[in-house]
Length: 231
Length: 399
Image 1 (spheres, chains in turn yellow, orange):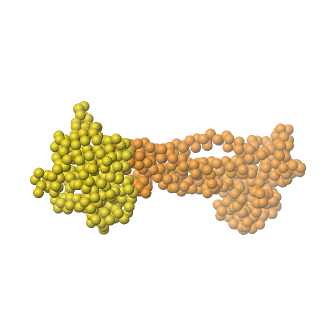
Image 2 (image 1 turned 45 degrees about the horizontal axis):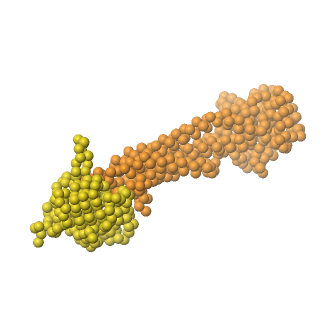
Image 3 (image 1 turned 60 degrees about the vertical axis):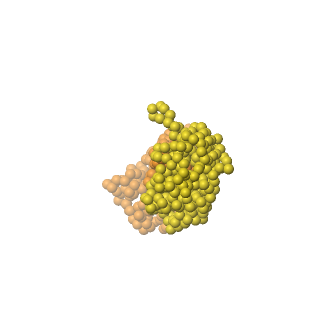
């Protein structure tokens, strides 16, 4: 059974001129457990909206999103919050760390709304991403690459089944971007989480076996398939 | 654990506004509690204060003026009465003890009150007489003085010291008498107006040089201790209804209560002002949190993205407002003690009546509860704004 099953998903916004702008129109999309998929799309193509719909942060206009067998569309906002807290990890382009919280507290918060705070697990995650000496550092006391690692640890803190990553390397230099991507993929694999990553960076996309174009998803339903040029 | 952590972090992140807002709560809460306690305790202290007497007999006047002059040693004497009036009431079967007093002089603003050594036989509180703690009582007919504890401390006079009184109830350096008095004793504190009086033999005031010769056979008032409190009814009838020369002020508590009744409107104004200050302070909590909501939106969106439910965020904001009020009210007790201490000092210096800032009063529980409750209530408005924060819009950038 797919971990994520989307059908006839539509999300639109009202424009200032009084019209309607359709941002996401995905007839079908499926993702199996523990699979890692990259979604490509240029800026403004609705990648973030698509991820926010999957995360339950946004409610779709129409369509169905089934996550782990649960239909998100029919859930009340608080129930969607619960699903997000227990099933989904989210990595943002700008990391979105809470500035007043230490690295450890940021990771603890990632689990406290779901399975509950587990200090030892939080520490082990930070150790896994190479920050065992920075547990009590505030985000501003960390380098950009280190902040990204805290974000990765936080995304995995609630033992999610699905990790959503929105341009996770967009704010990193070339070296850090490569290392970070490798870390995200390895950490997801080790924790048994599927990964749905969106990016417009060809170098990032090139490292994935499964790549989908958001533009194509909007026109035709298709399951994730091997990239034509993959070996 | 999560909610307290979120609240504590937010308080710390907005430290300056937390401190300023908590300080306004502290001032308002302290003022509110102080107004209530000072008002209630003053009322109780004055109406229960009779310095050990049930009634005052004096020249025809308002009962309140008589009581203020003879018991509280405030106000001017309404006039004198002949010594024979003292002898008459002292012989009354209803009277247990009659103490004549004569006033008219001071020493640096502290009144000299002439009386007999019967003063030392009066119980100002059950089982507690006016006792000389240092030295010995004055002897009748001698230029000797026993000082109330507060007066002795303020005037820095001790046993053996000598002083020359001044004429009149108010201090005028040009009105010094020739007589020189020696301090023979200091009273132990009685927490009554007697603490701020310089007690001398009755003859001292009556025969002080410069006084009217008539004063030698007159007194200012008679303080009366009744055998039975109800016995005052007969004396009141005799002096106030049947006679028209003297006034019998009885019972003292009722006379003072009438004064407080007359100034009750002032209490109400004070209460209203205190409540308004409290309302403004809780309003400042609302304004402070509400104005910071814009800078909090991103944090709220992140928390929501991590799975925090909207009502968790709502609760966090309400709790933050309540927490500011808790911090403020803790500090409010220091403000309360400060204000009450100053007020008690002034009241004691002016009247000899003692207030106890540490005494329990229900307002000490009600005010913190009300301030914390009102602040939490004020927090509902920014909390609704937090509740409605658009998560997607605030998780910038959007790709």
